[in-house]
Length: 251
Image (cartoon, rainbow, N blue to C red; front, side, top):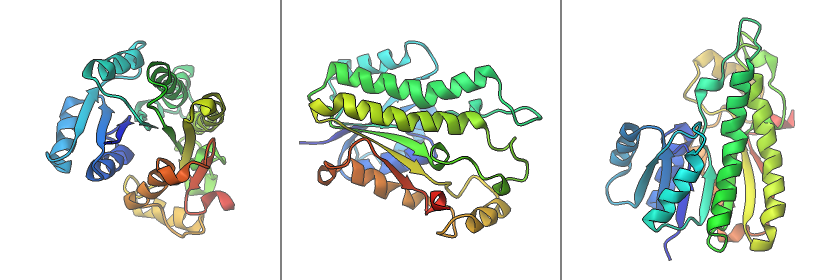
């Protein structure tokens, strides 16, 4: 039987790696994105020989999750694995004091906590016998507070709404794991460390001094923890947060 996985935020930095990995494994990959153009670019890059199904959606809209679940049902798909990965950089704003507005705080919480909850519950309600794993994509900053010495302009460069929402996502993982346990649906979270590629060399050098691994994560580091959590060999792991951060949270 072909495995079917739904990856939200499939055209983002993390999502692209996830989509490509599971597509090349021979899985049927449904992925969400806000842009048809971005979806087309990703599918061209991955190749036409794979089972890729884009779902265009703006999760900030009130009925977005319900619409996606209806699309999945109308297309006749059943989801075995859900990866809650969607996010938006638009809500990571701060003012001159490094503080955030109520609107951006709530919008970040919506994307990082409410949407994963709604999507998990929606798939559970419509296909409880097919859904087997849910994996939430978190951050080391959901486990520990940001280190001010990493930044040149702290706290403006470290929006508090991001870390607080990621911390809530970790607890959502625990709650859903308990609530879905009778249905053999496992729910886990991955708290990733910082990934190279979006920052300059000086930031990477400061980061390297603050973590036991001595480097930021590479994109190739993203796959292993996720592949592990969705595998049949991982049935003993439930409600946990794997800290895939190169040891950042040890210090």
